[in-house]
Image 1 (cartoon, rainbow, N blue to C red):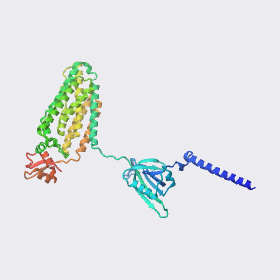
Image 2: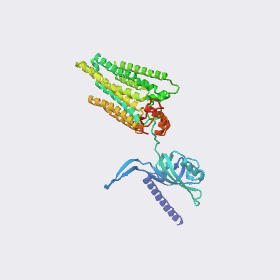
Image 3: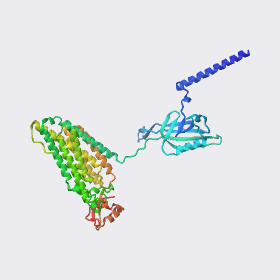
Image 4: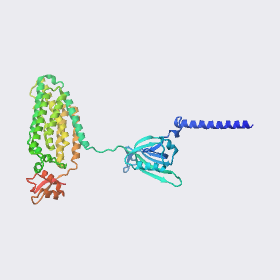
Length: 486
């Protein structure tokens, strides 16, 4: 009986154990596909410091702005993007934790050293890595705060609360403003569109013979002559000398104009003859680029070489001017090129006229693209100056846009409209903070230094005042003049 009773008891116990095992396996299958949920949890670490987890609370969602309106029952919720994920972790550190010892195969050390390691991670600048029990590895996590509790009844156990947030990349504005880079991008797109429309328009005209090629050369020569006349301008030479250090350069203005604050002066060792020699070298570069452009015009079928030569020519003209204001003036003249219409009639005359019109349009659009780039270096001296320069540039672009639209040059038309938007945004941004021009009147001819101190309370702006007023001598300023209001 005893052996039978024992056998029955063991049989019952075995049955209970089998049922318990079956229930455990069933629960594991439901929760983790054959693996227990607890076994799927990952060890928690922050900045490489392991810890036990009591609870983790995560906050996520969308950033919104709620707009309410009078006499309207509902609200409009404006979406402002994804919200950064935040974590509130309640954990603990235990002296000689058996479980944490097995993680990585190294002991965690005393509870005091664990606490110090956690504090060091939370107090170090920058982001680190959080290993979340269920989400896994999360990079770029910043600790907002940490609260650590030590209790007498817990002994060698520290409780803590971590407030964490996922940080994004740090972004700063670049040294070159977005408006300037947009100008350059749209200028490049305008040149590409101008060349594409030229190829489309002249594809059938080139086959008409030598007369069409000669007309292309004649059109190129006409534009070249405008550029050569521009670089021979006396104002351009005076602009080069205006960077000469000393009162002479200040009185001449030109290269020193603008309220940007940067004196565009040459080194003190530079002489007038050296500046004139540099201006002559720039003129020689223009002539070389012009010769290459005329050579390329003799082979209009090679449109890529022709377009590159036209772009190089107008860029050389812009680079020949020391003062940005001179560069804007010289390039603006190239944007208004209008050759004498072809007098010959018939099919040959029509082909020659098509070549002339297309080539003249292409070089004008290259000049407008260069004008947009040149304007990024121009610093308005006042609000009136910014408005005047902007109106002039926009007028030139609008005039060419009308020509492109009437001719059916869709590529150039769309590129010019985008170029206009870029120029307006750039000049409006850089001219927004400039002061307006006001008229000042005094009872006597005072020195410029005295007037700078009286008007601006800043004697260092004396040179700027001299450049704007352009007196016969800085010691005897006019009794009435126009200058920046502030």
